Image 1 (cartoon, rainbow, N blue to C red):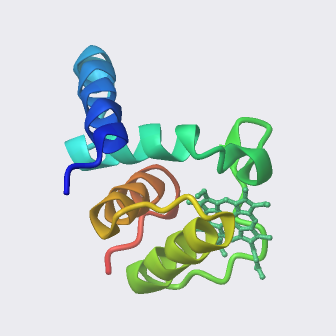
Image 2: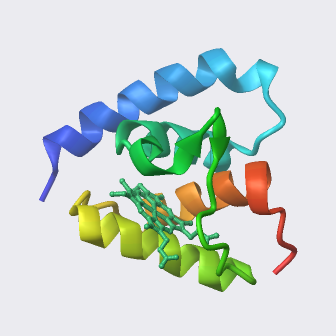
Length: 101
Ligand code: HEC
């Protein structure tokens, strides 16, 4: 089944990414994750003074981080695909957590 919203969304992401690609050190996946993060309004709770607010800072490793991304996705009923959650995880890791594993 083709999800039209997803197709349109991805075309937008690709368009946005090709503009920002040169100005950024982030991987392609992380750049897509950034877009997803912004569109899903994760900022509403997590961006404080322009920085990602880790709140209680329970994250110790990438697996932890991924499950938090998944938990917030689920509780907000955003409905990201697993590969989208992965991109958001990469975005947060490359910009904030910088965990090796
Ligand atoms: C309604 C407010 C709210 C929104 C919107 C929200 N979160 Fe969260 N998030 C929280 C709270 C509260 C915690 C911490 C819970 C705790 O520590 O018990 C948290 C924790 C996290 C953590 C773990 C932080 C750490 O280092 O301990 C990550 C990662 C995260 N959220 C990602 C996301 C993503 C991605 C989105 C967008 C899909 C999102 N959140 C949207 C409230 C929110």
